[in-house]
Length: 639
View 1 (cartoon, one colour):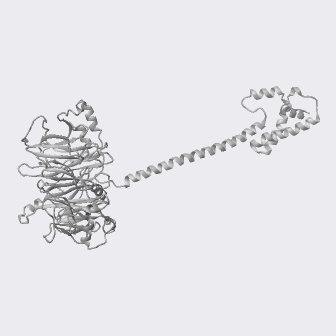
View 2: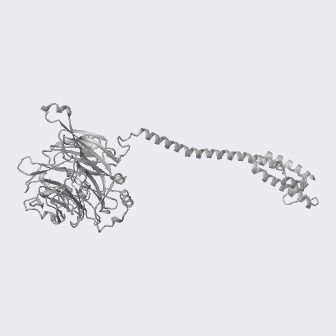
View 3: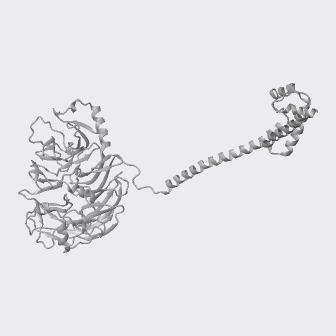
């Protein structure tokens, strides 16, 4: 009876105060429900049948002795133990087992995640360290110096040494290849040997001026030119040599007669995917005036025979230059005191004796062909006059003798332009499409060929021209479209014959660099100036935005022989590279030095020189801070 009552008390929803008389049906139902409730309560927690049976028996015994109020009191205010009976204890023990297993799995998962993160990180660190120790460092390229100076042989007079710019080591900075002459002191003691001079070509690292490699030559170098993939052509008076630009190792060498010019890269004539070469030589028969000779760019071997020409005048050698017309026909421009043109197609036919021509020469230009001198001649007259031609160059910004001109893409771009023609008394621009003169200005005292850049924003390159007479140097910039003067100033003549330079800025305008002495006042009519001794030469920079302000980048008493500009695309900077001769007192020309200065770095310390104010200019209202900020923020890009 007590057992039945205890079970009845434990049924859900039944309370002790509501107990009635004994009912067998209720008794049976209660027993069934109690057993089901016990199974549902205990089985999912621990899954052990023996524990369930034992807990059920004990639950019945305790239920007979407890009242409803005491049971609820014990549940609500107990000491943390489950007063419902051992069933709760067993269930908690089962839950503890599950909890411990789940915790162990969580720890394993955390360890796996940590290992998955740390192991790749450590592998990457080890890989980087291995690369740092195993990869060789590039020689001489650890630090770029904004200014450097290197002694390279002797000047041997005031002749400009041949040089070229090319990225020899692939570090994206152009290096300098230059001809060097040295005097062997030991051989000077043996007068019977006569010649004590030794010749070589040296490569200077563009980063710091260190010598990368040098190669001895049997005779003086007359020209050095480089081209892709990484080769340089060395030209002496009698030989052509191709060398690896990275090492100086000779690839091939061929005799070339008496060479009179640099090489011109022409389209591939042999189908080997390598541009071929054309040079001008003196004819072996001594009856003709000049010969054009084709050489293989792959092996240097002759392509056919030299093609001889009898020209109408004698004078300075012009060209040869490659010109591509609007329809894609190729012509060679050359001359002796004149400018003539001949179809490259005709040169190839005469050299090889073949009637069929390569695909690259298949295009004809009827407009140009109509301008031949006569039906029997292959020559087209570009210019022939009383005065001999001093210089002839394409009207393209940044054209410079000292950059390589075997770059095929550059040659084609520069060949699709009008031309600048210089004679003793004037400078003219000749229109390419019809060979007519566009404009002419007087230039009776011009001492070097013009430098070409962009002064205004009309898209047509402009000319920097230097005139020298009576100790006065006049520098002027002429509009390339119409021939009008855009800027001019006078200086003390530095007794220096050196071509100016132009550098294209990010804005599309150019800065103009030239050598001169102290500026002369514009208000005085000066007819003659006696320069002081020793002459101080100054390198000035002019920007079109500030026409009355010059930046003095360098000053020296050395004699500048030749100069060029080297671009650093990554830094948006340009290095001005100049070769100078440092005279030795009483002994004439001394050592030959190469100097390189960063233009951007030089502008941070440059001296500002103010010229006479132009009433049309408003730059006089700008403060020194504004001017310095403008020049220091300049960035440059390749032409």
